[in-house]
Figure 1 (cartoon, helix red, strand yellow):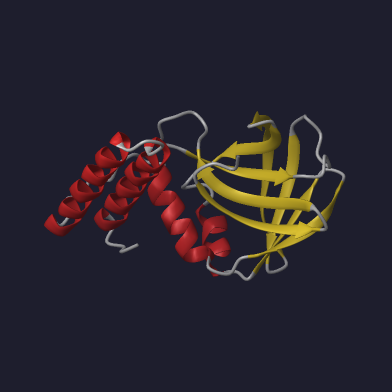
Figure 2: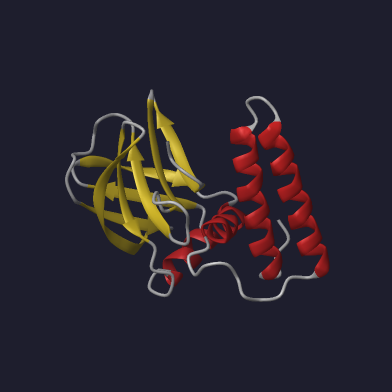
Length: 183
């Protein structure tokens, strides 16, 4: 429902509220988008201004468009890596994110572990495409081994979903390795 990527979520009562970064819904990537999901019908099916504050500062204001994925209304806006780099840095260094959207009461989300999660999400979604940097031989060997395992899983009954996950994981790990980051 939320897609490949990462999100900070909270549940107030029975209503989940999430803000995150994920691969664009149109497959395959490259590309990433910010998304807002509120599971209590608190948002309207219309464009929405969303103000985001990390540690008490307004760090970003996004104009988000409504989309329905898996039967759930969400709001999205494309990631602009150069334009959003300061906000990404604030998210990676911050402890709390405050979200204000439309008539919905403002809510806060914890950002623990956000640096590693955002790094992984960006590698998976590859907003600038697959890295052109050469990979160390160990990276390529690990990638090939994961792809072979995915091919094996494809032949197992009910293994198709696991195989797809393994392929995405292999691609993400290769991009991280090429960027000099170990997952």
